[in-house]
Structure formats: structure tokens, C-alpha cells
Image (cartoon, rainbow over all chains, first blue to last red; front, side, top):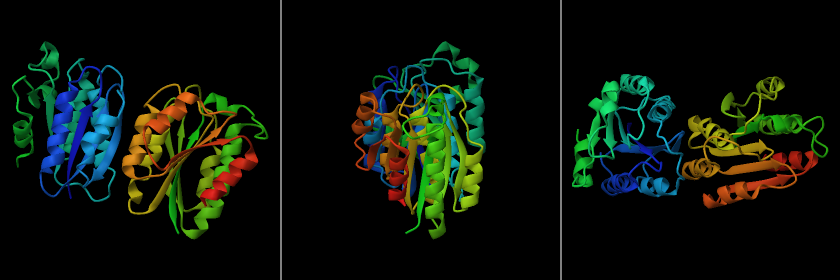
Length: 168
Length: 179
């Protein structure tokens, strides 16, 4: 069974409009076809909010309802939560796609790169939607994260961005 | 009907205190109540999982219908330290139910109700709501903090319930009601 995991930041730093719009597009399009979908919310801490389901429509509602999870996003912790979710079933998910929404408000440690590579070693494809127009200067210290970033600019069409992210 | 119970047990410092007829401690009374529930339900194929929490959660026992395993696991449970991350305890207890999708499931939390850190309780209750898992918070105390009540209610989970438990007798009765 195929799985798409949205890993979405909920802090005062993230552009919530972008996060919500992305989830609304996903709920509307229900693509890629045949995938189950899950949602992990994160900030200082992280938690699964929606375990794998075919109920795409609850994604934006669940994100809207979850309270702000602190100020600084801990992307490593969020990715650890995704690993736990992906490994929780006896039958492996195949394929696994992870879309991370991240404000890049604080520099993550090396742990974030390591956790990302660990997730990819499990067969996951990871894309990071950064809710700012250009990467911060310190991103060069996190090469694994830097390579997977798609920045969101004022003129970015979220629908088209989503289409690009989920195309086979 | 066989059911999967995931128990989240508060092992923060305040649980070491006696309360009402819960002597020598609230924790001891909670452990005995879990053992009584296990004895009652495991014979019919129901399973029990146990998570401990204080400042952070620790999975103790995965889902089992082995009553002796539950008793053995509980025997070593003791107070660990200060801090009470109730939200994390609920989340971990829900994760323990991941292998049991498709079965009748419930999370039962035994705590004296203090929340000092970790995942917001509202977020944890939302996870229970979106997982379709009923949640029963048994508060071993004289009153429920207004802030806790507000957080649970604001999640809008129709199957989330707070039960104030002021005696050991009531605690055992509430646990047996779940059986």
C-alpha cells in the first residue's frame, strides 16, 4: 500500500496560509491515486495527528484544529515521528512520499540531515516546502535538507506546486 | 467482545502520595486497578498495553492477553521523577494501538491531573479523535483543573471523557465498567 505523509509545522513562524492551502489542494485532488494519507504536526515537539487513512478531507481540518506547538520548529523530531509512523505496520508501505512544510525559522542541527537520510534509507521520497522565498544562509550547513527544498514565493501557485510534488 | 485497552499510567512524583483510601499511594491504587481490569478482560481475548509517563512517555508493555505478563510488568513500576507530560502519555498510548486497527479500542489514562510539559493535551485528544479511539481520563484527585477540562473539551472528541475518581472503590468500579 502506498503512503503520503504530510509533516506540517504549526508554529508562530510558519506561513499557515501556505500550509493550509497545500492541505486543501491535497484533500480536493486526492492524489496520488491509490495512496493512503497521514499527517504529522510539529513545532518544538511533534505528534502524529492523523494515522494512515483514505479520509483525505480531514487533513486541513485537523491542521486547523491543532494548537500552536511552540515557537521553534524541530524538523528532526518531526522526521523521527514520520519514521515511527512508517515503521508501525508489519506490511511495509510502498512507495512512501513525505511532504514537509517548514518555516526554516531556526537552523536545525546535523541530526536533521541524519534523520532525513534515515527516512530515505527506508525508501521514502522526501520534499521540503519552505514557506519563505529564499533559503537562509545557514542552509549550507544542512546539505541534505538544502537539496530537497522548494521555496514558496509570493507568486507561487500552490496547486501547481502540489502537482509537481506528487507527480510520479 | 474482545477489545484492546491501552493504559497510560502517570508515574510522576505526586502519584507517590496517598489520597483518600488510596494507601500507600495513588500509583499503587492505579496499578491494582489495572491488574483487576486485566484479570477480568484477558480471559475473553481482550488485550492490554501499558505506557508510563512523567516528563516523557515510556512504552512498558505492548498489547498482550497474558494476564501474568501484565502483573509482572506492573510489579516493577515506580515513581521516576518530577514533571507530567499528560499529552505525550496519551499520544504514546494511542501509538500502542496502531497494530490493532479494525478492533474495538480504548485509551484509559490514570493520573492525578497535573500537566507541566510536553505535547498540548488538546493536540493529543485530537489525535484520539482522528484515530476514532475513545479516551477515558481518570483523575485521581479532589477536582479537575479547569485548564485541563477546557483543553479536552476544545478538541471536540465525542468519545473523550473525564472521570473524577475520589476513592479506590470508585476507581475499581470505573475500571470494571470498562470490562
